[in-house]
Image (cartoon, rainbow, N blue to C red):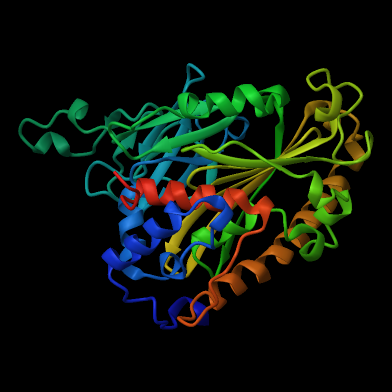
Amino acid sequence: MENNTRFNGHTDKPLSDVLNELRVAADRPFEAARPIPAAVNHSSEFYGHEQKTVFMKEWICIGRTDEIVSPGDYITHEIASVPVLIVRQKDDSICGFVNACAHRFACLAADETGSAKRFMCRYHAWTYDLDGRLIRAPYMEMKEGFDLADHGLRALQIEVWEGFIYVTLAEHPVTTVAAALEPFRTKVVGRYDMARYKTVMRETMVWGANWKNLIENFTESYHVPMAHPKTFALHKKPLEHYICGEDSDHYGYHRAPQEADVGNGAAHPNNTHLDGEWRRMMVDFCVFPSNLVTLMPDFLWWISVQPQEVNQFQATWGVAIPPEVLADIQADEYDDWLEALRTYMNVANDEDKVLVEALNKGSASTLLPQGVLHPIERNLWQFTRYLARVCGAAKS
């Protein structure tokens, strides 16, 4: 696609220059904040740098626990070119592995989701149990000293938080997801009990923009009244009602109540978890670096953003619904309800796609005004500061 291969003046900017621009942007107080420097979204050197400093080290969301309910159910993903395999175990725990055979590294599971009793490499039939142990390697008795126990799948650390599955490629992560997000859980999202929401769809899309362009778009709702007339703007939340959350090294969020206590966006009468205005409260949040979530009393939309090139990303997304809401849908009406929901989400994504790709195309210019942030775009500034910190651009 055209805007994935075009040259722009930021492409070859040295990493040191990009880090300096990022440092200057992160050091500004919010009152004087400007948009993330354009080179941060277009420099080839910086793209390689953030793969090492962000995606090789941070916790990345790959899905939800209710997507892998039974032993052998699995999800695959890719993080910084590392194929990842997440598997529900026989004891109901969840394990993560590099999705590559221990023989000559052929990818084991090709599908995004599925179920298996064991994993067999199509190349030479090396076969692994659900826990990653090698249980069969045809003809390897011909190799002196070969021991099945020495050739299991490479394990990865995983963590479950509020129904989400996170994986890290780091052998020694700086923090746990639970510790990093505990203030946010206690203060805001814990009251929703997100883990009980049931996943009803999982989709993947590829857009022609830098992965951070989607983070920028999702973490502000300033654009919603203008850009989402067919979807999110219908909730009619006045911009002056939006509240941006506290500054954090690990997350950013904003929230706003809708006017109506009933209908779409409001808690079901059987919801016993939420009180007061929280029964009609929407929370948009980002678990840095790349897990985006819209949370409502009756709806949850999550996205995991995966860079593919400097100007291209893949976004895996899903929708989950509280069980009390699903209980009201008659069995013979479910397919139509689900198709209507899918259509709604596709329209919302189409509304956002033109914005995100326009942000990428416009910021490719080396001649730009200085830019400015709206008061409810504080989350963009928070993300810029996070990126500066993990990429080594923040003040020591």
